[in-house]
Image (tube, rainbow, N blue to C red):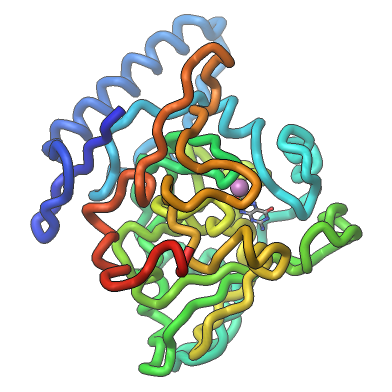
Length: 317
Ligand SMILES: Nc1nc2c(c(=O)[nH]1)N[C@H]1C(S)=C(S)[C@@H](COP(=O)(O)O)O[C@H]1N2
Ligand SMILES: [Mo]
């Protein structure tokens, strides 16, 4: 399976390039057709529900890949604050109140403080991006995320020249996040990126998916999506962003330093100590479907490999 990225004026991205207008038109047609089918199934007098983000335009950097079934993406999640079980989080995460929501910005930046998510959203126009996503446990999926480029938001906080990394922190609330009553990880969940990774145009903040609000179990109201890294970098329910001079200590790295490195770029050549990373299972596929080969940087090598020029990716895994 190869994927296509849409062209932008500045970036001539890898692989086959699809004209953005062609893709958007196709998306509209598909939506219109789906609307007709659904409408014809709805009894007269019942209004079809319009999805919250149905009109969000497709942004650049979107891959024109077929999305994984919505039901699979919603109902097979990793959210250790609630449970280590990939299906129970659908119900458990309903207890999380995702609005109002505020985000604390701290550290090496001029514009720090507490921000309402609503205000952040007002200054960050939404777009849709179809991104490949891959968990470290070797399952992969393709998700049409709704959100905005991470760099857009970070630049508004005016990071100083001392900001070499960005640290993200998830909500800590063991009354609701019942998994936090145990110590499967050190709470709160923390993740981090090097500043150039964070500012890379592929790094994305998601607030929705499949034209609708982000389900709680998928990280509402605000989650990171870094498509060339293993899924655990894509931290959910973010309440704090801190710019730092030194590499942040991340939850998974603390839990297993030999198993989960800071960079965690998808890499078929670096096996997890307990299993191979060379093949992956597409979410929703039957057990008889052969696994597919994992691609370096999850297929985004043409865009991001230069971030790691000269680095030994076996050492900096
Ligand atoms: N706060 C938080 N973020 C998290 C996790 C988590 O347990 N807690 N799990 C991570 C892991 S291991 C993966 S694979 C992805 C899964 O995203 P999904 O559940 O939306 O598919 O979320 C990541 N973000
Ligand atoms: Mo994961």
